[in-house]
Amino acid sequence: MTVRVLVVDDHPVVRAGLVGLLDGEGEIAVVGQAEDGAQAVSLARDLEPDVVLMDLRMPGLDGAAATAQILAERPATRVVVLTTFETDADILRAVEAGATGYLLKDTPHAELLAAVRAAARGETVLAPPVAQRLLSELRDGGERLTPREVEVLGAVARGLSNAQVGAELFISEATVKTHLLRIFAKLGVDDRTRAVTVALERGIL
Image 1: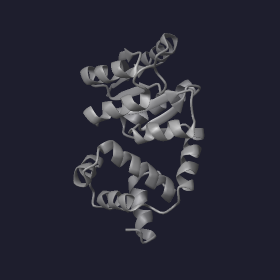
Image 2 (image 1 turned 90 degrees about the vertical axis):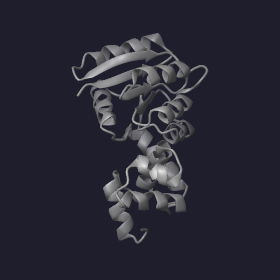
Image 3 (image 1 turned 45 degrees about the vertical axis):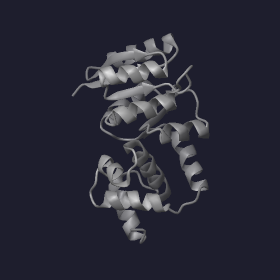
């Protein structure tokens, strides 16, 4: 299966570098390039990419806001933020917008390609320093699951997909993903099945 990628960055040189790197891979095809968030939203609508590589800080509509808009229109699209920034606020904004990945621009080529493929499969991809900061941020907020997180995990335990959980709880699929990321961090797990198992073991569910 060919992974269709949209590259979003306000620097032409960075875009060209990413396109050159990705288009050299047989199973990855760059279907479009955008120079700002508004163009990214428009192109995602027209081109229906599998994965969007999203710069975070751009003039006008920034990466987090563009991510939220893209996912509101096309929940199946995976957005991977690729940026030079790793401040806690930036990371949380991107994750809360529904991004499935957050990588730094100095990520080695092989890791970036692996991350694009993983994101296309629906996996979460976080650069190690970002993962550490996100975990510490969430831990500072307390280890206990919130009532909403328990609701989300309970629905997952019944076998519901993210989209079905969102429909049942009247929240977006992106918000479900955010809750799951927080749940994983609090429980010290990295997938849905393990989260349910640990929650059952601890008597949370």
